Image (cartoon, rainbow, N blue to C red):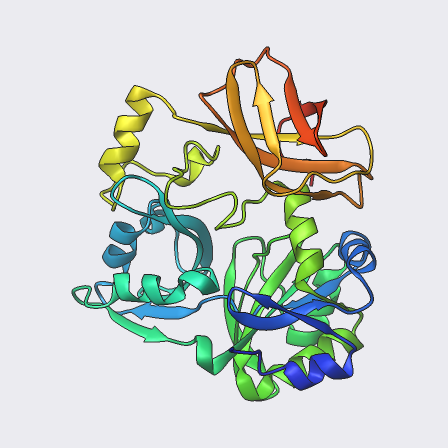
Length: 347
C-alpha cells in the first residue's frame, strides 16, 4: 500500500493511520473533535499527498483541459485555480477536480487519488499537450483555518488568495501553492519536492499549525456540504443532480455535454438533499431517507462539532415535493429531520 513520504514524521507526532483511497494516511493525532475545532478556530495542517497530481503543459494544454473537463478553464487566467469535474458520456461524475493554471500553458490537474490513473489516461495523447505525473515526486500539505494566512506568510513569504495559484522557493527548493482546500476555511494547498516535505511540515507546525488527520477533514468538509467522490458523487450521478450545476459551463465542448443538455431539458432523476437532526446522534452512510413518494439513502453523515447535532446528505428519487417532510430511519425508527439549504455553516 502506498504511504506518504512523511510517514516517520507523522509517527513522531503520534498519528494513527488508516487506509484512505488505497493509501496509508494519518487518521488523527489528538482526536477528530479537537483537530476539527483547531481548524475552525485557529489553523490546522493536513497531509493530503494521496491526492492525484499531474502536469499538463504545451500549446495544446488549454484545449485538452477544456474538452476533458466540464468547467471552462479558458475563462481562468494564469495564476488562478478552478473547481471542475470530469464526466462520462452519460454526464456522470468520473471525478471532481481542482486545476491550477500556473502559467499560460502550464497546469496542474489534481484529481482524487483513487481516480488518478484513469484521469491521467484521459489526458494522454492530447494533441500539442505533454502530460507528466508529479504525484510521486511531491508532498502536498493543506493549511486551513482563520489563522492560516499568518502561518503561510511566515513559512513561504507569500499567501495565495482564494483560488489563486503561485510558485516560489522554500529553503532553496521550488514550491507550488494555491488558495484552495476542503474545509471552507481560508488556507492553501502547498506542494514541495519529497525531500522538503518534512521541513515544510515542521515549519508550519512551528509557526502555529496543529497536525490534523483525514478524520477531521471529513467532518469539516461535511459541515460545508462539500461532496466526497465515491459517496456523494459517482459515475451514475450528474452535477445537476448533485446541486452543482454551476460547475458546468455549456459554452464549450466537453465529454458528457450532450447528456447534460438533455437532462436540463428532460428533468432530473434524483436530487441531493441536506438535513440536520435534533440531537447529537449522527446519521450514517446507507441510512434510509424518505419524503412523500420519494425514497433514497444517506450518502454522507456525521456529527457536526460546531452545530452539535447530526448532519447529512443523500439522494431522493424521484425528485421530492419541496413541501413534503423529510424523514430518516435510525435504528428501525423513522424520524423527521430538518431539510436545510447547504452549506450547514456560513463562511
